[in-house]
Image (cartoon, rainbow, N blue to C red):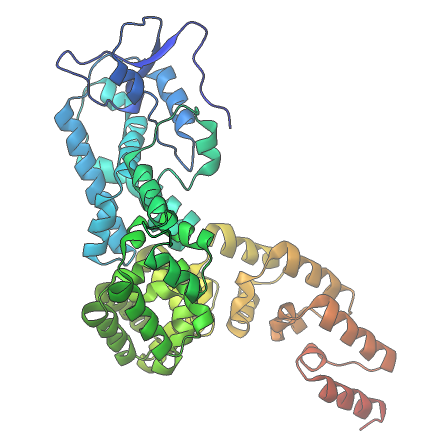
Length: 489
């Protein structure tokens, strides 16, 4: 990625300096000027540029500086209002993704770097508005920021919180493109302090108690520092009051000691949540709606973030499943087998995906019980291309719906690595197309280890079996069937 460089003998600065004293101006106010008469603080600010993931901040500046030449200064109170609006939008978005209000507020309050980045997005999106000196309305701010946050959420999934808290640190490629003279942001400064806390020996020469305990638990020092970098507050957790109680609970639930480091690495925030006030009541609530209490070990190993969601978020998802037609007794089974479903937004993921599957003739209620992971797929990028794959090969929508009902994960398979090579081999087997409609599970078997060897064996025996018999039975049952066919039984 190329960084924006000033032409020869031009100085990059914030212009113009405010007569009443310097203050940080929006990124679109950065210009290139031949005049050296500007203050040191403006020079410093001009280097403190956050990094954008979807498009580098430098690219944004390049676009903005080429088209915006207005000299109208944005007043401090408008900038402050925009920051508060951005905070409100981010907090609402995090709550809609299932975070508790208190946790969402805590994340937003620590995300100064990301908030500044969102404000810069507003300035780039509405640069003509700023040139005219017009103030943005709340709906305009939301219209600009919500799609961007949704794009980040789809890209980073469960890691969105880490992106917000650690901004701009997750974007190493873009960060390397910036000048090496860039100073640390307050957020990264806090991270370095936290890293130092778990890296510096105590006065007695030993490592901190937290580090020693985690090393004994099975994490190595680099993993500990990675956890702290993602979640700096973890460095300040008291071992006896925060870490040990969670470890004891996980062991009590049957989580193997060897799996606990993985849970902490995935969701260190769990250590900061009260067992008596939050975790245990939430577990009881989930058990009451059907989560198998004997399966907590597997549930938390798969998705430890489940216990960080609010009851409101769970209730919204449960209401949707009920509305879809999932029997009450099966809702807990879905959450037990695929707790990740709680990370899917009802309005942005579950409902649109259900409507799409229904549009091709699939039973969405049955499908979400058998293959809930399919509801986390992007409709445009994943579901529609798979459907088009079969339509292009003369399968009807009705046939595709039948295949989905019989083999719910078919849309989760890779087109290049799975569907295409297996379909091409199927064409050489001499079966009619309706064999795939009747037995789409064909695509779930290994081409090299199952399909080709079984087909070769059947051909050598001079008999013909339907796909189901060819692939689904055990090796011994397969040989029995072949023998009976050869014997004419």
